[in-house]
Image 1 (cartoon, chains in turn brown, yellow):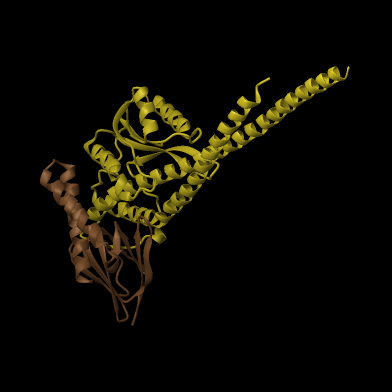
Image 2: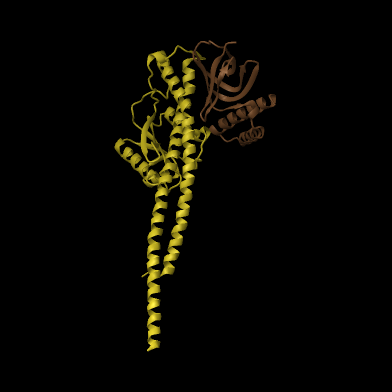
Length: 134
Length: 286
């Protein structure tokens, strides 16, 4: 089966680099499936789940948004933050969710609300993906 | 002649100072190494984003619409992000930063707004009665991107609203452990590095190039700010390491000199005592 090189890069580190068969990513216009020899593409990723298939093995990642670039030589995911589903710290995500909800209840104005909302969305996605693949 | 008791006390106090500076030196060394690694780890990300922006800005200027963060305006107001450290004891690092930025401000001749990061720069700039728009302190030694987002948010919002027409970022660039160079460079409007045409590709943009660029540019600014802060931390730690090493060496020299003085004083005392005893003994014989 044909493979392509996939790299997941975050600000902190290069989190993943391997040859894979299929990548499914949450694009702004819906789920995107990338197979080998895809045309060059550049898109924004929504918070959601990345699915990587290599042979018969599937791995799941929680991603909090970022960019996806498909190049002829490789595919690059520039992630804001990215975690392997099995490595998600559930208690930490729950804590973050609780904090965000509290902040939303206080209803301070402007930027704080948007920040709390994105934080809430991030923690919800983490929790959802962690639960599903426990 | 200083009495040996005073000398001994002095030596002890300097020795304990040397212990503290030695410990600070070792802490700074460890922290510096970690920050350097962190700064290097972010490099692939910023290289990628830079390349994509240069591809995109070429593509999107064709459409006739220029993104606000790329737009060059007549410069009437300037903003500077002034990055210094929270803590002192790091040699001339902060003094050099403050000197460079204030020289820069004086040269402008037009209103300059400041955004300060770090306690030292804030105190200096408030003392000079500069126009400080926002101040950030208490950034940890190992910041994540998220910690620095409020800083970039302020400047992106203000720039888009037209509060200032150009934004510079001033930070101590980490050249090597011995050298930290105060650097000031333009941040917004974003000036993409131009790559040779052979490197650029015909991309499909989803949903469209302008939207993607609009998402990427703020991220680019955030990355630059984050990176400058990392450099500043690496500089701080290495400057502190050198300063503390010098302090330890000085203290050890002091101890050595004082020990010599102490020994001399002690010998002199013994000599005088011996003289007294022999003089007394001779007097008894007679």
